[in-house]
Image 1: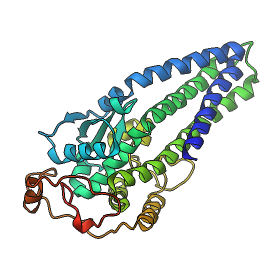
Image 2: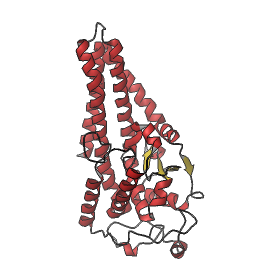
Image 3: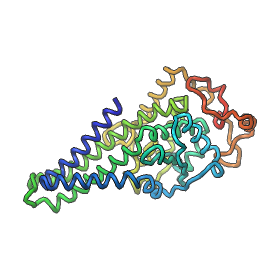
Image 4: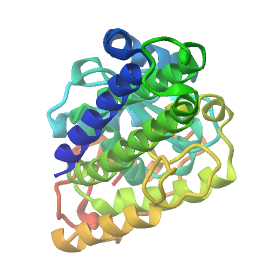
Length: 329
């Protein structure tokens, strides 16, 4: 059902784009709109990851620079059957994360410094599993295409002002003004609808990948409070990228309404808690021992024996948290 809804919304977005082109410029305008959309989608397909990472000045890290963060991503990727994505960090105090890339073999996951400082290892595993779910389902490609189409529809609406008196215009002056207002609004609503649908599915699959729905639920609770308190100037400057993040980076009321980039956190957490009840997962042991002073990715002294013994696998779904070992156990 989530895939059908996404496909339907993408079809609506494409039809809206071509329809606006026809209303403004007739059959010729429709063809121009179609090829413009095709060209923009191809450009976004091959360049979206570099563009987004560049906008946020993300720096790539490896297991030498961020051993626990990269190690968690590696284990989760193996559990999900995915190639190891590139791992990035953004210097940003707002705790958040996103994934980008056109396919699993070209994917990248990115965490803010605020996220790595706020969450414990289990919660970080929940968040990274969510992002890997986006990679697995190619949601990053879907959101890039929808963002490109939404931007192109807005551009066509602006063209309507200059093309409104053309002989192929089907609307007249008043109709052109209406299209200039309604078309970008409709495109935004469809884009946000796709974003919200994919977030629910990524929560579900992410919980399966890490094996504990309540780890992600606990992380979302912390992120919701912190993201409303701590601004994200980079996201505010590029609001079209907001749907990429695990929680809304923009300062707006986080509710499940038409203009929300994400579902409400209360709804997402409730679904994860319900999933935990169905699978017999427990909330016990989510909190981990305090990190040592070496930084947010260093292991605590209590964890070193477990790591030395090689017990570093992601726990299986439904196992008791008290039995877990590894970088977040």
